[in-house]
Image 1: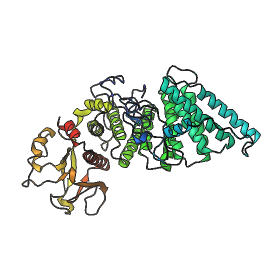
Image 2: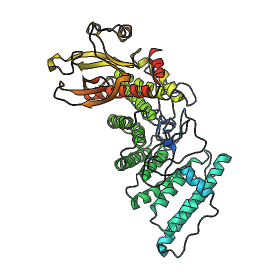
Image 3: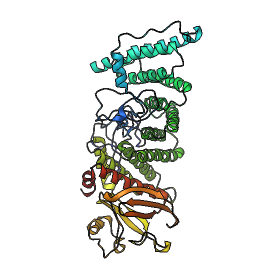
Length: 526
């Protein structure tokens, strides 16, 4: 992403600043702050999420959530994983792709452009169409001409870009003709907005005619009109939010940028309300909030950051291996830890300490790296935060547990004890060893045997992990782990603590079923 210095903002992959004052390095440098990755740009490997679909409502994302990935930003990957068009640490796909919520469309933009390329001439508008009343038609013709002037002025930066722009220009003429025949054709308006948005990405950085911002502004007008005609067009809200986010990024940390980020989040709200099953929209929503938090007054920042955390977490719960959202959650927690340290620690006793936030951040970044080990943005961020893990474990903390071997026990028999999680298991630390340091835990974990009864759950045996509420459990945040051998019930210290345990166990399990446990083992055991 671009310039913003705060961790909470969508930026090209740079590593998080360390507690020791390590400054973010420029994008190309190996060490950078963890940066959010948007969900719209292509990442090194083409993924289904990067496809653009037709107007029929459906959703999905390009895993390069950078242009949403613009998160970390390969815009969905860092350049980021933020809702950006930039992808740091990402290799763009051979051809730019339209930013669309994948999942709703029946065909990709590439297929659409290919079909248009095979046509000979743009269709001629039927001047005698029933929709062509004089004043209304003239208004649409003037609007169409203004938009076409912008598109006709775009010149690609290379031969591939010029070739693609010729196809986009041809497509724009077709959509303009459709709208002149029928001003209420919201499909044509939507597709034309996509063409304008894609053309904006084709604008040379040193070009002044037309400007990228002018193309994006015109795309936003088309999305606005399309959603007015069809209020349930969730893909239009999604891509409209991406276009607004790109305009906001051009304005740095200004009042105008703040208003644009608020507009973008408002459109993500509508996109998710209309299509709740979109991890990409949730991820980009979180990125927009992260950017917004860097601009608003300090008194508003923490609430916005915590809302962003909830969006990233919701995205992961919809798609457990969604590495961009996983990484972005790590970066926003890192930024929150930095802010908490700067303000002198936790505001109240119920809040998580900065050290715990750093540790949580490292867990998500390590998990993202394990799922995508070849992604350089994740690798460089991991180098910065790995020491914040409770090595040689991924997570260490407290849970209230029943006596080992007892599925149901009186509440008085449940005891709060220490547990550790690594790439193979979740295990209770024997009572006599509870006070040992995490370093000594590793030397004792393999010696736990039948003589010291402890609760142990093998990752390979897990069937599901969920929050639970049951009268047989002591009061608190209940955790149920279903395994092939039966259920294990535990109680976390708080609901926030429970979220951390649920995410960590699910991530380790997801890494296991994706065959990447050896990568995670290498991270935590060194």
